Structure formats: C-alpha cells, structure tokens
Image (cartoon, rainbow, N blue to C red; front, side, top):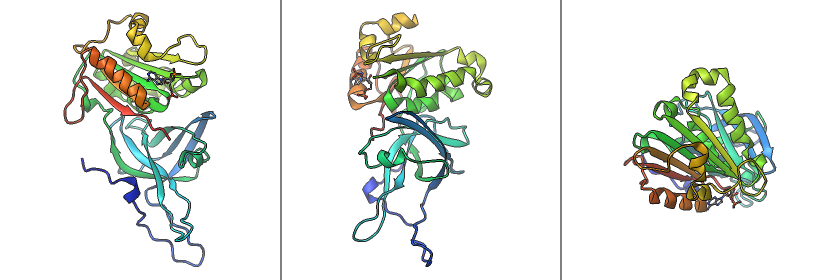
Length: 291
Ligand code: A2P
C-alpha cells in the first residue's frame, strides 16, 4: 500500500468559487452527516454518507475532519484531519465513527457540534492493522478495548467473517465510568436483538459473542483494568475459558498507548506474537484516536 502523505502536506486542490456571491471553498471529499448521538460530555458518535467507491476492510481507519479557520494573512483554509477508525461494518451504506470531545482539541472541539446535514471531509484511503488478514487462523478471538478504542471492534463485531472464522468472540471494554460503556453496550444489545443483524451474522454465530465490560473508577458489576484481570486469571475464570495460548487464541488490541504497551507485554508473555498485514501472527495492536 502506498504511504500516506503527512497531513501537513495535504492542501486543497478545489479552487475557490469565483462568483460574486461568496468565496466559499467547496470541500473536496465532502460527505454529509446523517446522524449524531451524544453519550457523555466527552463521547459522541456520528454517521456520514459513504462515497460510492469506498471499499474497506472492517477494522480499518480513514482520515476525517473539517476545514480549519482561515489563515489571518492569506485567508486560505486548510483541512484539519485526524485518523478515525470506521466503526460501521463494510456492508453498511453509511459510515459510522465514535469520537471523544476534547474541549480545546483543534478538531474535536469543533467536530462535536456537527449536525445532520453538515459536511465533513473524508479521505477515502482506508488503512490499518486491526484486520482479519493480519491474524493466523485460531479458535478464540479477543478484542481488547479501552475508551474509544471500541470503534474498530464495532465494525468487526458486525462483520460475518469475525464469527465464521472463530468458535468464540470475546470483546472486553474498559472505561473509567459506567456511562462511557454506553456506546459499546448499545451496540452489543443491537447485535443480539436486531432481526436484520441476526439474519446477516447468523443466529448460531451470535451465540459465540461474549461481552466483558469493566470500569475502573465508578462502581459496576465488574471492576478493574483488564490487564490486572488477565494477570490474576479472573477474566478467564469469569468466562470459563483456559488462559491465553498461542495455539488457540488470537487478539486485537485498541486503546491508549500505555494500555496497548501493557497488554502487548501480557500477550507476548503468553507466547503470542504480533502480526501485520504482510506477516500474519497471533495478535495485532492499534492506538485509539486521542483527539
Ligand atoms: P484507570 O482508570 O485505572 O486509569 P483513559 O481514559 O486514561 O484512556 O483510560 C480508559 C480506561 O483504560 C480506564 O478504565 C483506565 O483505567 C484504563 N487504562 C488506562 N491505561 C491502562 C493501562 N496501561 N493498562 C490497563 N488499563 C488502562
């Protein structure tokens, strides 16, 4: 795959409309927002139209964003783009994203105010390592997420291939507070109860799905960092499965840098090796979008 150009080298090619009406730049790669949902002060999801030509593998990310403020001298606007995992499955007509809101974040301070009908910029060049192609065949697939790291798994959990390739699919999601689990909880609920989803994924496949939410700072039925729950063996005891093994288990990891690093150590200690598109192995890691 061709390397992506750094964001600061991207410039807009579409010229400013030269009519007397207004010098409004038309956005290249513009997509229309169709739905926005807010979960907490710091979390929201949104859906946008999908470019007809966009093909992607569940778990990949794209660059999306808005036009930045005009340069005070030249008046020229540059796009402000960030990597966002596509949270919708590859069969969906629209694209879904799950984001944090950072009050002084250059992009998310603005993006959090988008409404249906608004446009966002979407570069249609999907990439990423959280894809089935980067894993060798196995029996049990773990998705380990913290915070907005749930997003790529929201895509993979709605992809029939996930269930066809494994006997068990276990998604763990750890957040500080209970309300931060809502997006993931709602998604699991819709996968389990939605008739269309049942038909698409196969009822017998849905029995393979196990959901393991935990919180670390607010009381909930299961508390603790997933790394601690792995180390003590509590995760495996709760699920009634054997400890991690390179023979049977595969994993995808998405969260903060610290989380990814700590989990990688645990997976390697259990004998799993990190894979890539070019060299599939037993686990893959990607950093969640951080604002
Ligand atoms: P904790 O509350 O103990 O820090 P954040 O918002 O900081 O990205 O954290 C999201 C969730 O991930 C929190 O529940 C947090 O737990 C947990 N977490 C953060 N860093 C790690 C880590 N290095 N290992 C395991 N869990 C982590």
